[in-house]
Length: 227
Image (cartoon, rainbow, N blue to C red; front, side):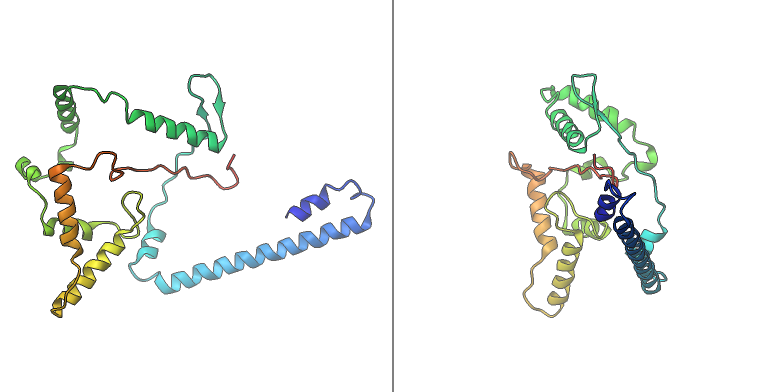
């Protein structure tokens, strides 16, 4: 494609027969490659459908799930100015700075104000979305069964936090433990380990400056619109 643009922009294209011929050859070659790529993509799609289209799988769910449009942010205001930027790098930096600052804003608030704010927020939750568990249950430490239920309910192919370890790994470790334990062999109990860790956090909280609850935001650039 670059060669075609370079050839088309040559000053002698209108007078040079070789240049025009070269442009025609390049166009035909590009068209051939594009058709070949399209045919390959179509064949891959047909293969995927033939293999997974009739079974309930991740592929089936992806194909049949509704495609909701994404909110595209075309520009951002540069803080403390009346100017805007459309450059992806600058927009990402503005968003990063904003989210960093709001995490340290209004941190020196008395406990009574915090309690009132929590109650107000909880009161606005629709009744149908509220947990049915009694309030005192929230003060109890989690059990192995609770961790296992949460793990089995987690979405496969996703991961929590920045460690990048997908839930599938924890599920696999639990499966291996179950199979090994049934044969009366020593095995690593991932559920017990997770329960101990989470109970410790429930009781003592996280270590200061721990990245345990750190999240991240990744801008998704639209194709051919990076800047």
